[in-house]
Image 1 (cartoon, rainbow, N blue to C red):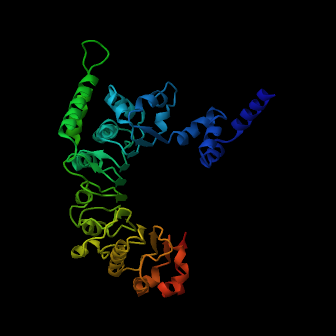
Image 2: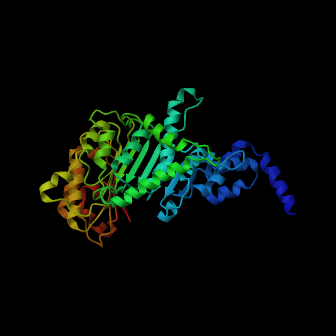
Image 3: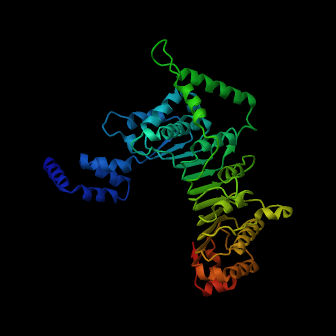
Length: 443
């Protein structure tokens, strides 16, 4: 009975036009559905692989475990369908016991020829050297051989580095320079620089281990025969590195979580927009942290005609700026001619001094904005236990600014998130906005 049912199902699926099959699979709601569809027949399996293996996640040091699966003996290797690679932190003891991990990294890059997005969370330079550098070298080689290829080469377009621990900013800067001209989306959050704090003896030991591993991986299984590939990779990276970064294709830039001695934002912004006339024709979405880096205004000048979404993150702003340095909190939006959505998120209600400075910052930006393009203003607050994050005078001042003729004609929505407890006070705080019915309270 079961065999009969299977046979009938096979005949039914084979009678369906391929366009219908692809529509069914493309509209599957979740991973379990994709798995079920992949078991129907071989024809369905091929289409499902685009979704099942589109994104893979592994821990630093686990590449050897997944390699057989990604580059197996099947005609359509799973790795060929992967477009996104996520690498997360691993146990340091596991990493120290890895043998020939550079060779494993090269095999992983070879098994994933179509990766366009890399996300790295909580990793150290160990993972950057073995995974990210391999894909960057792939791109540099592809770019050099572009004229010999029948189709456009696959290049790294989307890069995320979050809570990454490196020796200093230079370790990240060099890698960004090598892949800058292909990047469309770049997110960097909470880098940790260890050069100034690490014990010199520990750093010397790490350098020795790195050299020894390179020498070990340069020896093949065949006796008395050396393989110079690891050393050649380093040499080729240096040879193919561009003289300077070029972010002309960048569409989305997000910088968050700068803290302590790990300052990087100004250095990166100077690379992206060294002058107010730097070409950034595609940058449309920008995310920064509060207070804004000092080089932000140069970026606004360079990309003001294209930036239509601006988000300011306030999660790490926990200590008010000194009264003698209030200029740091001010914003200037005079050059943002295309801005349609402005968001301020993660505003802390306590202490009140930080909320007040955030308010003064984004209000100064709105006062300097002179165009009739802004459609959505989004303000998101962390729970304040029923207390208003701003005084009634501050709310009234915001209401007055939003009543300016150029904003009256364009602003469609004032979204307030996290202050539902003071909803009844909106008629006192924002009377004009309430009368225009543009206030949207989000719980």
